[in-house]
Every structure is written in structure tokens, then in C-alpha cells.
Image (cartoon, rainbow, N blue to C red; front, side):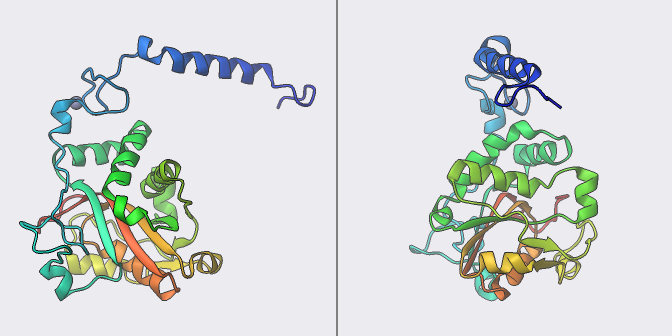
Length: 263
Ligand SMILES: [Zn+2]
């Protein structure tokens, strides 16, 4: 601990700051910009090369206004899929950046299991873009929580990291502590839709203080991947029951086929 005169920065800290500053200034000279996925040379830092970029299958309009799933054609101004009409979700609208396949799947795995925090900024920009309409009237960003043991094992909650980055880029506050897991749920890899729904039923709660903070607000729930929607549905139910005005959902990727991937 530095115990020098008050108001004077410790020498080690000054040195670190000088080195970091110089490092940023020289970053382009020392480390030429390279693709965040394959490390091929690119024109700018924090981006993908054209080959990797073209392998991300972005979700573009027309999409179901409720579920955010791509539709073959647009019917009117607000198109709602048959699936959303048959089984309306507890949340208002969901959007995802891309399909959970190809390069997006590889990037999500690098981020989740490979501790690739350098992907945050790109993911934040993508989320901001995909959720543009929904973010316009969002009061607070809330990440889907991880159970405590999984947090210990993985060291970070990827949904919270994405939420923090989105909050930083948009200026919308985030509330990472409002929503909690009440119990650990089994890993959902390989589970079918019904199994996933049972697995997460009653697994979330809104802390008393969180209830006060979020009542009457428009919440943006953030997760990395929407697989069947069971997790965000369970979270949205809890938020709605606690008096949240509106719940929208934003994710990096969405499983859009019936085949459940290893999310
Ligand atoms: Zn690349």
C-alpha cells in the first residue's frame, strides 16, 4: 500500500499509467490490427476480417415483431409469427444479433469459455444495433443471472459482461443485482424445449430492493444466446409479476431451427 504524501500518486502507479498510455498510442505500430476471430490482418482494431464477417449470419428484417425470429416475407408494418400468436411470451419483444451458427457460434464459445474479453466492444456494438428500436425506451438493462456455483467455476457471467458493455455504449443504467437465481439449474445442453422449461421454472426471483428499483420501469433483459427462450421467459415472468412495466429481450445469438444446439 502507498503511504506517501496525500495527493501524490504512487511511483508504481505513475509508471504503469505512462506505460499503458504509451502502449495505447503505439498499439497500431506494435500490434497491427487483426481479426478478432482468425487473427488475419484487418484495417481496424476490434473488428472481423471480411471472411469471418461473411460467416456471421445476421438476423435481418423481416422478423417476427414479438419473438425476433426471421420471417420469409413481410406482411404489414408489424408482422407477428404464428408461433408468437399460438404461445405469446411473457416478454414484449425479443431481438438477437445473429443466428447461433457459423462464426457467431465460434465467437460466443471463445467469449464464454476462452475468456476472450477483447470481444466485448464488438459485441456491444452489435447488440446496440440489433436492439436499436427496443433500447430507445429502455430504462434499465438487467442481465440473466448465473447460479453462484457456475459463477465461481466460470469466473464471470457473460450476460453481465454484455450488459455492462451495452450500458457503457448507450448510457442506459444496468442493474446486475436485481434478478437472482434461487437455485442452481442443470446445464441445458441437449435438453428439449419442455425439459428446459421445467428446469428453469421457479429458478429466478427479484430481490426486495430490486423490486423497488424496477417497478414501473421498462427493462431490457440481456443474455448471450436464446436457445428455446425458456430462460428469458422464466425471468420475464418474475419481472412482470413484480410490477415491471415492460420486458424486452436482447441476445447475441438465437437458435432459430428446431435442432437444439449446444448453447
Ligand atoms: Zn477472420
